[in-house]
Image (cartoon, rainbow over all chains, first blue to last red; front, side):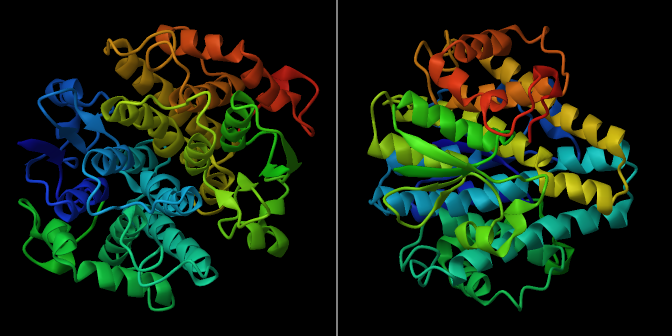
Length: 223
Length: 223
């Protein structure tokens, strides 16, 4: 059995859940409460010295970490259904879009950054929420600009086939919506997110249906 | 001819220069001054709507963006010498280390974040320098913890073969050293960075030997 160390609110763990679901790989998830600091314990740092989720245990070997590295691993070990196109240039486009979300923007709203803003820069709750909304929103704006200007966009980020770019897009979209960002002026991004969220693999991975999530959708606030 | 839009101080452009050099691919680089805001012009946003470097033009086709996506593209199109191992688990480890630097930490010290800290959070020069040093240093500390605890580490991040992890490590190491971070207590990271920096492909890509760089090494401050 594959074991995922994740958390209901983690957008990075969400990306791994979606990919596992799309590839029909069974797994069990152990929740690591990042707000309670469970990632900072000695036991968890033995699993991931970076003190972050996700970490994926496959074949009882050393943990795999970093959501995009895990998605690439799953793609290489379980190629069907593909989450990357076959042409190198198309693969580069998909990876670039995935990195727009998962590298350029998501790290800015993680708990460690939130703590630094509070403790070292004295940012209060409102300032930290504005910070998160700014970067979540910017990632979607940049994606909208890229996707709308590019004929390679389709039903999904790259043509009509799901890819890791759609998984990354949807994770940031959930984060943005959870913090109340308006997305009505971002039609391509919203359309792709809507299409993904209707799929069973995405629905089962949704933060709010994971153990530990609050009962009411309006309590959502992803990390 | 391959054209790279970069900047002497950009750590992400540095990663692309190193990979191009290692794979002996000829290119010309056009510098985009991120501190002067040249990335925000309409002309440059037509090249990269994300208003960031690097962007790589190959075969006069649509620009490739995001340093790690570009490195993967170069690996697929020009497999020799390899910058990823062949085994999926080893590839996942290398990609995870590369993402530690290029995703988890480098985006935090980019010009757009620097501007937000100044304009919206009122962080002064000293606070912003401390911010950059904190995340540069943390990336190296986390890498030290991971590399020192793992028998898969070797002369380089993964055994004795260069990989994209070493390119990403060296970029952050240059950023950290440029801002005066002490790295003496990080022996594995320092040893790998030293080994890489002695190689011709890394030396020719060094920020301080690019057009526009200051004459004196102590003026270094990477982005």
